[in-house]
Amino acid sequence: MYIKIKLKEKPAKGVTNISIIDFSIDVADLKTATQNTYLNLGTQYAPIRADNFISQGNISKLPFISPNTTITISLEPSNKKETKYNPHLVCCTLKNIGKEFNNAGIEILSNQWNLIFNKDPKHLIPAPNGILYLAPNAKEKCVITTKKEVPDSYLSYSILFSLVFEERSYYFVLDPIIRVNSTAGSGNG
Image (cartoon, rainbow, N blue to C red):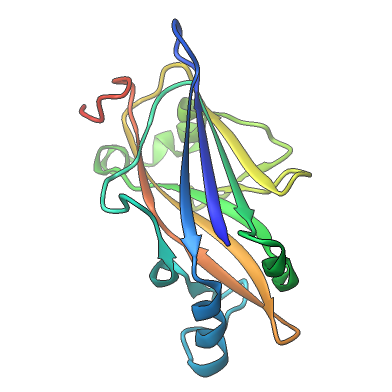
């Protein structure tokens, strides 16, 4: 099983660039851990951190998201056998963790997400604590697009998903960090 993050970058001039990041999930180890350890309750309130059960090629690099990029997150079975675990993408969340943003004060909280993303209110809920919740669409994918011009931002995002082991639903969370930057493709800013 894997979490697939598809980035579809549409520069003002030029060819659309599509890149895919796959976070491979070791389902066998997750099942063993849920059956034999007390990692956490495995509920929506107290999900099990899945970071130790995920592998990805260059995970140490801070991912960079350009302006005017559509981000699509989905949970995909690696093979037909894994569908028996009833994989389900529950939601994705975004939190602005940048020092510049957080040191600026409360007055910009209400508008923070409008500066970074084009929001579809049908699938997005900004919470009073500043976290943005993204519900999956009908195709079980969380989708959001960065604006054409964005302020430099450091975002923490979480992916909450569930799997069924031994007739019980367990909830898991993955918590990487990304950088959104208006300096196209450089990662510097």
